[in-house]
Image (cartoon, rainbow, N blue to C red; front, side, top):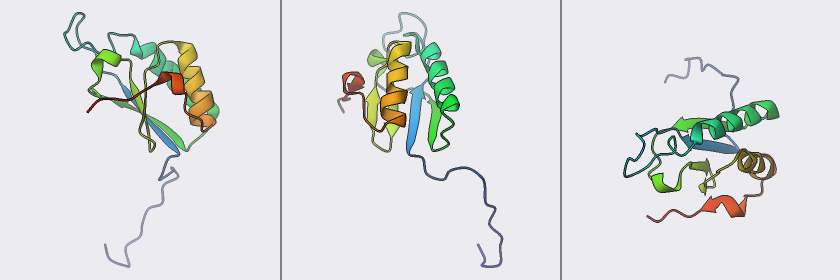
Length: 117
């Protein structure tokens, strides 16, 4: 890029305090790997999106992801840059993750999983 070229400045955060990736994979029932979708992820992710939007925080992002490779544990999400993996099962779990971790900065220990690599 030449020095004379103009750089477009967008009104979006360049770095997020938290960036949440949520698995939206939907495999057929009884699939041997299972899937987050088959385990009820959709309403949880919808709630998460609404909670984040309602917070007005532009420094927190949520992105739908394909398979995150820990299907048996689903629904599963990971929060970066910390790399914290969660397995929320209820709407109340989502509320707690949003309030305590994403807005309050304190991870929710009881919902964290440590994936085996």
